[in-house]
Amino acid sequence: MRIATRSHLMGCKNYPENFNLVREGMEKTHNVANFPNEERAMWAEFMDEAPDDFYQRDKAEVVYFVGCMASFSPAVQDLPEKMAAFLEKQGVDFTIMGEEEYCCGYPLMVAGMGDEKVVEEMIEHNVGEVIKRGAKTVLFGCPSCLHTWRHEYKPRFDKRGYDIELMHHTQFLKKLIDESN
Image (cartoon, rainbow, N blue to C red; front, side, top):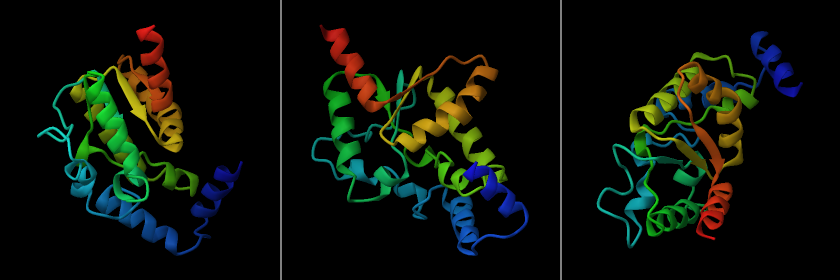
């Protein structure tokens, strides 16, 4: 209901001016932090034990979708560092998309701008990147990203006949534990 109300207000041009700045920033940088997207995987470059490819591989069974905040906010960058190191240590065939990962679109959707062209472009881009890598599973640390992928992205995979599993990283960790027993 709240998102529908915000969408209506957006259509009536009755919204705070700073919403335009958010949309323009995401059009330009493809992330909510408004940093150059080329820096999205910089956290991996600072890891002591990261592989030479910084987890950015052409093909993998699993895509770890890091998310904007974990990619750009130093306060939470230990999450992708620890998750990537754990996946690597467990021998999981995974990749991150680095600068090819675009924001999931949730910030614009929740602001009532979900029907914007920029959201559509981000979704189509991310879907294409996952398919290009041949992934069967996408992992998320961010619950908002997971929610958006389940409700906005999954139908696009289904429409293409592409079977994809979307999981929070804690669900994936439980799956690994269950499989090891």
